[in-house]
Image (cartoon, rainbow, N blue to C red):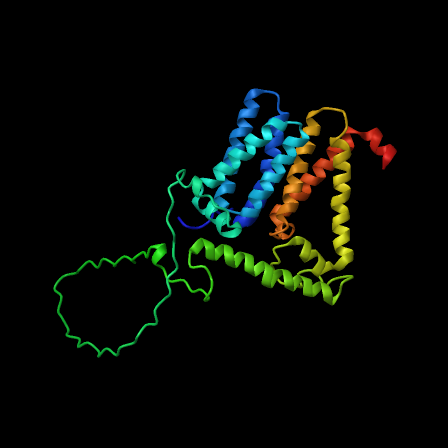
Length: 318
């Protein structure tokens, strides 16, 4: 609908945003790695479309993950002069989205009034407390039979559409009364007061091994707390050591002296991985199967490129 955040065919808006973080980091690396100008333009157009889709998801943590991933790609590619323009344009584009900028304002209390003239605001959507209806007894109407000589075409009455700002929405006393502020407030509170403490309580029950996969319900909105609660210290360390080994191999390859297209691809995937891990602070991205499949495939591609590009060094050091 007009007011809903965009979804994908394989997941909701949060998972779609996490997927786009992977795509945009690799896109940035591809623009740097390609030599022909028409290839750069095609990839740039694709990246602009993916970035616009990311804005439509209005996922704050994914946007921050995108900024981190693209910055990593530019810095490791030694495109230092590109960092400030790319980040500035990205933040400016984010601010032109009314929903997105309002969510950041509501969450971090950041004042973006100086950008208010860039976009046409939808206005403040205040919530309305539904009044308690008073039931009045109505006597039954007297029915008089009427003879109809010919058929009458009945046209159904259309259902009236109530504007969003006039719809009744239940909320607890003390909560914000603006719609976007309320959603940001509840999104934060459910993590801090319900989901994260639940994962930590599961961790305290069995610190070594946890309470088992999927034992702390469907959502934790933090993959690291989920790993601690479900698999304990041993499972958490096993997961972290996988990422540390990936980081060790990628860093050794990236900081080598050789320059090649493969190196740019590895840099792009590295930015995607780091952005993905930042996303995991507030979204269960490793449990979103469609996104997780792509993530681990990209990691495998990166390790394969490293192994094929430096076979002698790998054989000597591994």
